[in-house]
Structures are given as C-alpha cells and as structure tokens.
Image (tube, rainbow, N blue to C red; front, side, top):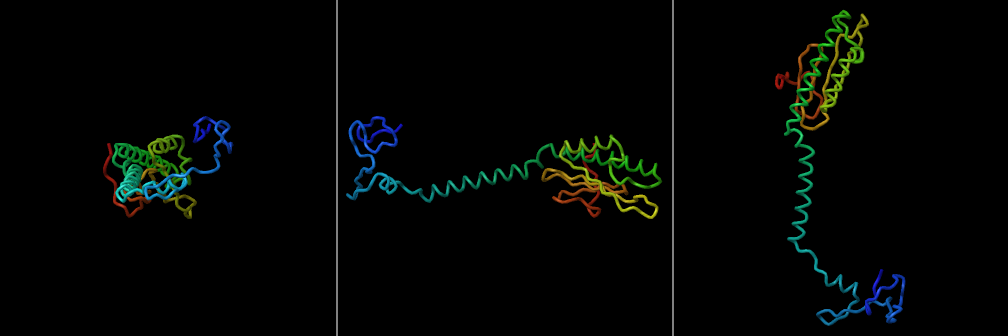
Length: 198
C-alpha cells in the first residue's frame, strides 16, 4: 500500500488525489535547501545525497579485487596444495603401469603387435581407467599406424589431469613413464618420472 504524504493514511497507489484529505499527489512537494532555493523532493534528495569519497571508492574496489583474486587463487592454485593431488597422481601412475603391463602381455600374445584400442585389453583395463578418472585423470591411448605385417608396433599412453597443477603423464612402448607439471600433454622429451611410487 501507499500512504498519503499529508495525512499518512493508506491509499491506493493509482490515486491522484487523497480521498481523505484531498491532497494532490501528482505534484511533488518542495524542499528548502540550505542556500534558500527550493527543489522538488526527488531532485532535492539526489542533490543533497553525498557522493562517495575517494577513500570509500578505493575501499570498494579493493574489496572487489581482493574477492576476485581470492576466487581465482581458490580455483587455480588450491587443488595443487592439497593432499588430493598426490593421491590422484599416485592412482594415475598405478593405472598407467597396469595398462602398460596389459599392453605388453597383449603384444607378447600377438607377436609384438599392440591393439588399436584399449577396449581390446578387456574389462580390467577399463576398470583401471575408471579408477584414474574417479581421481581426476583421463587415460588416452593413441596407437601408431599399422606396419607392413598389419600390426601396430608403436603407441602412446597419456594420463591427462582435469585439475590445474597436477602432473601430466606419458608412456610409450619403451615402458618409461614421463611427467611434466606444465599445463600441457607430456611428451617423450619430458624427464622420466621416478617419484610418488608407493
């Protein structure tokens, strides 16, 4: 409800005249400023309102920037400082090692030829990949081109993290596990990974 500014009784908001005191509600009341000039209520209130000081504006912007920086820190750098990264990397290493063992067993059974896809290795490798995925790592298998004998003699196995700050892993038919902390795929040029194996 709306109240009349003269008699302060509740009236309909669409009323132009107060039914109780007859006040014309379409005309804005006048206020007297300190310098003696008159303004309407809406213009006078805006004119009398103080602008925020430089200190207040600086504090507001500092608060906004601090909040933004804190949010970005939380998103980008907090995951690498928690114990979750070590656990996730450990699971990625285990998954890569188990997948490498399965790939070598497949190659031994197939005369040195690796599969075109990991699905050929069976359910155990799929479960290993799912365990890595549960810890935030996506396993990717890329088979090389078929040779003259029709078999695949080269492959690349990657473990890509979903979180910033986690290691990227690389393995190939040599069996050497390589890693990088850079936010990119690990390659054969990265140093061998020897840590966090429990």
